[in-house]
Image 1 (cartoon, one colour):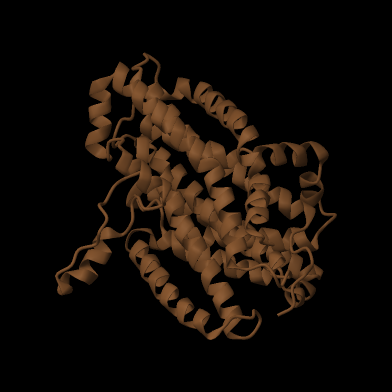
Image 2: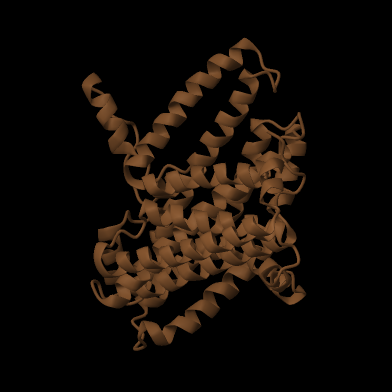
Length: 400
């Protein structure tokens, strides 16, 4: 399969940055409505849960698209292997995770000292902060499918040697990272392993044995996560497959005509309207906030929109997205959105612990400003420098 040199046009890149930033702000709004002085069962709580579900699904759509896009480009270097892929993903993930864990620790201590009853309330719903929960969160083992592995080991009279814990410091959003991390590892391992098996990467016979052993382990991990997060995993891999189509030269050539362009606009509009309808259904009736159909329709919307923007470089939408001001603002947002995603949660629960006589709707704008400013400042020293970290590790390990 032949791939284009640049599968994403300038306007489609801006579009993805815009979607990522909007999704991140939606997550903050979700947690203001569900974690700051929440009223369970009220419409505002269900609205927050619905907004959050859509946003998380969008993040997995974007992740599948962009990880596949990045890997397609880097595979052009025959020396780029799984170790380099691991370093890239490690640098990206941990540039945000480590400061988020430190911030969570600080706010956990402050809540413990200033509002112990609220601390006990949080501890009754999540694992209380401890060295164990810190270590398991740091090593991507919280919310691990322990029950699934215990069900496999039970006939042998064995148990899985890990406890079941929730993310450190009451930072509930960190569970998404665990799922993504293990998807990354499986995707990268399968990709490089299969390339070696078909002769595209030079590996010895010992590697083939290692590949199958690790592949079985990673497959079991993904199957375990599927018990709880099946919609997110399906959406991620479907989105990765969509990037293969986006980057395919033949597909782009066949779509480069007026009839196809109008068809893409129609499908994009229909998928957007359908997403809104299913999200409303989740809000009003089903409470299925991570519905797999919703995720697949959202991925279709993003996928078709990218195809349209790739073949309509000078259309009205493309020109608007390529406006210097729009492009600059979305680029700035993209540089700290990941940090915002990971750090807003402990700030919100801390503000909730203060028991301020201000309801969540009046606090919405101040919390958005506080969380965005905090993330922007932290990201300047961390997220925005993750490529420097990746390059430094690769030099140290003599990788490419």
